Image (cartoon, rainbow over the protein chains, first blue to last red):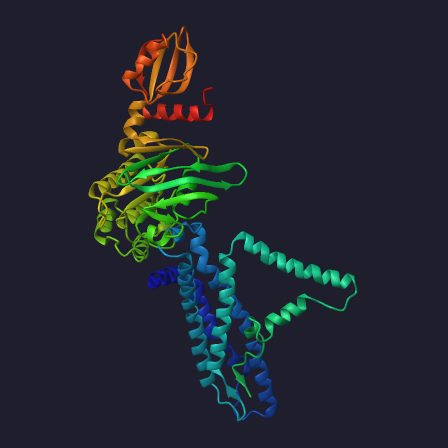
Length: 219
Length: 303
């Protein structure tokens, strides 16, 4: 059952997934190209190289979000097209069907993750690092996988939610902005939205995986 | 008589204008039950309620002796469903759609499905998005029949299909019913909705008529065919109180009156004799006329 759902999901999403996998493979290699050669380089040059490599690393959280968004929303595209009638007519509980869909979509995330891993290993193998600088291909790959999984889960949930749930989410966002507006007008030195964003993006917030250093090479 | 589908006091509302009201369906096991009604009468909504896709406001639903929605997976495992509109994933090929569907049904009959695929001339490698309307209709029926279900629920399965495809689909249904469901003690039950009266006339043995969310009539097809008559009367009584039949419609024509009645039997002429009316003619109504008269009577009942 899972194999068939995975097969169906793969067929629906294979083009974007392959494209994302190619990008995931290329990004770490771009780090090396961007940084140039290191043999016999002075310390200042190494620092510059590391800075350049880390600039490429800044793209990775955004790329992880892109992968999560495309696969999360794509997981339900086929069902949306048939207004979920097929899924609802199948002889299994709704919760089980959702888990099967989720697991199939999560399995597709392995393709860009593996590509990023291979790209990172290839990039790390292609340079001779000066002492004190290390490559972290496996750590970067693991971090990328966790990040895409979180983003995938968020957009998977948003994509399946009802119009009412979407209105609730929008209402909450609107409420936060309104609260900030009221606090500003009342000249109170407090804010709500930045606090909520801090809570979401700082550990143990669910989006904290996207924040911080995403460097393939670091000291 | 045991029922494959039974509802009691079923009520559902969608928006301000549409509601299913106090619906009491009794679909005998092993029957081919035609669910008739004009467009927008609530047939699709009723089917979605029966299959647990919508939640009723009140009332109870029992399908194959189990309770909806509590036992839905067990019910759906034995139910083949052909929806009004195609609901399959358009990026799959016919073969892939079959493989995906079969994965959910332990008793899926691959041999029978292959037979039907050949009979319907469905190309295995064609994408569903490239299928014609007729081919899609056939595929939906194929998937439902391949399950060898105890209950087959068909929502306007031949609507919009050309006569050749329609005949193929109906022939496959009749063939399936004559074979019976695999593993089931008796014949399969078929619940088929349509607004094409003449189509159901040929295959159904029970009929239910829905109009504006209400069940107007539910009776054996034979009674529906034979029980609705047009009577031509002279000196027709003013009151129909105590009549042993149901007067659906009465219209004056010259010095006579034309009555459309339901539940007519020849011995009931005695009641007219006793009322000093003269019965000039008893004419059969075809199913479509009977259907129209039923709807007319339900919308504007006689005082």
